[in-house]
Length: 279
Length: 138
Image (cartoon, rainbow over all chains, first blue to last red; front, side, top):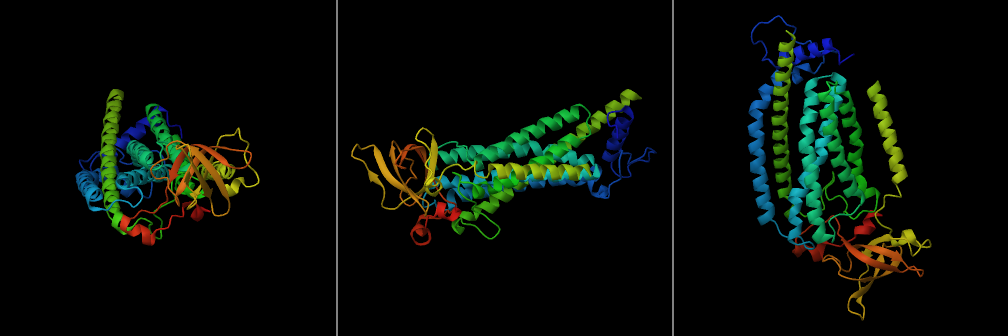
């Protein structure tokens, strides 16, 4: 498939513009699904028009749900829980640090899933999703590193050490930056998105390394507190954590939806401009 | 097909890299790791473990402390001059940066406190908590 040829690009433009149109709005005779490649089975769920119809009302719901839950969770974590027996009040940074780590890693999992969907079904919406997730994912990974440093100084006695957990998380942050640059370059050169998608899958090897770094190697960072079978954080300190986790996740989802809608609008505008220039 | 091949290659590369890193990526030596094979004095290393209860003594010069680091299998005596982090205490985890002497004792130039993954309010600490950071890992 020669993607950079004019014909392929024109076909893709038609596909994006017609996909962005509301279903059955006005009878035109242009082919509605002219996207080059196989017609995917998941098409019904991945149609941008349908996506926008769901995303428009969902964005403010997720945003405000996130803001309210974050506010409640932080209030609870700052005022309603006891201090830790060893670390004292310092432990409260947990309620930001853990959600940041969760979303930094969860963001990359979502990029990987989007990349697989994109490579298998060739649907442009999946690549748009991956690109939309990358920036907030990178920001949360950075937030995890920053809050970790602030937490490490009073407890461990150091801002930073090159131990397995800290180093692998820093690598994930750099991998995010690489994905953002690669996806941007691919888009500017009218690439077909395959290279950033492969990169998105390749980066996944870091996730188990981050998770198990504290088990495999001697590290300064303590072992995992939360596993499948339970938690070694006492109930009285733990309960605000699910609230902030849900809150930051909703907020993350809202940001991703906003970015996806912006990207779709931009693609649509660019495709229309190109078509007009050719006419 | 290409995707599957690519995924396989990535997984294989990751496994290779991890097996190569297995021993090299450790942040510190535990006393049992260096027993009988002490790194030379000119090599900067980190020693990690639990500060043995009852082993912490302040030296006569007022700024140095002596304590014993244990991992449950072996012990190493450590001397440190300087300011220890707040969380440094007996029965808790520590990572000491410095070097070994010929007699297998350790001279620390910096101390890092290592805490474990348990968090609880102070009222529960005495009853339920027993700090076992390193023993549990091994």
